Image (cartoon, rainbow, N blue to C red):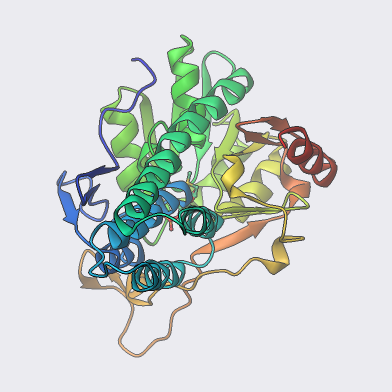
Length: 352
Ligand code: MRU
């Protein structure tokens, strides 16, 4: 066990983006190929690829594809086509700030290449997307290095959703901390909440950890409070889609309940995030847009209807955990604990 995951979530080669189709895991390991921004936008919306950092990487490559395959030889038309791709990709998923962060980086790269011929500008955008991809992997390893110090040898870690290699460029954030602890020689067990309705825990976290030889059990979401109360887990580590300036975090629906349960049981609750997920422009969690997903995700399981015809459902995809329930944020720049607003501001200044 080396701490490196054994599969590829997303890759770019010569004008084609390849993604592991996460809708088909764990039964089938199928890699889909994408040739244009429209196809990548659809892959993000339909959750072929998901997880905040991976969504950002995919969007960057979507814009790179628009540049690479632009039909315009004149700079103005080229720029318009790239900008249309950026607008399209911005509309895919509203909660993950990494999406907007990556698109902003691509827009800045476009602005920087304004004086270049179209071909050179396209190459610059492809390079920027590759840099976003490579940096995310590097940040996950740094998160792992800081976070693994929090995991005692022999610990059981409860996690919610999938914040693993599948949700990033590789290694993962929450699962990256676990991979790094295992690579450091610690024995770690994981309890993965199944994470209704898309089952990221049961299908994806269980798949990637067991495939990499890390001991994992799956529990239904409703079991988390009871398992924590009975100290069946020593700590909780989750990922996040957006961290507000005061330390509130948006993450997969159900995370708030896990945090409340951990707080009540006196179990530490950690949130792992690369700096690209920190959104200092958003003052607190109330200002984070929560994505509503299609009702069919709730009404149907494996294509079979489980909710009576005509009964409405609620399907918020994320919730917000207030910073008061968080023991520490594990970032690629180090650990942040209360007061989170001051800690995040100081860390932002330090790195500038
Ligand atoms: O709807 P998803 O599967 O994209 O939600 C993913 C999560 O909630 C993850 O925990 C979060 O994006 C962090 S991934 C490192």
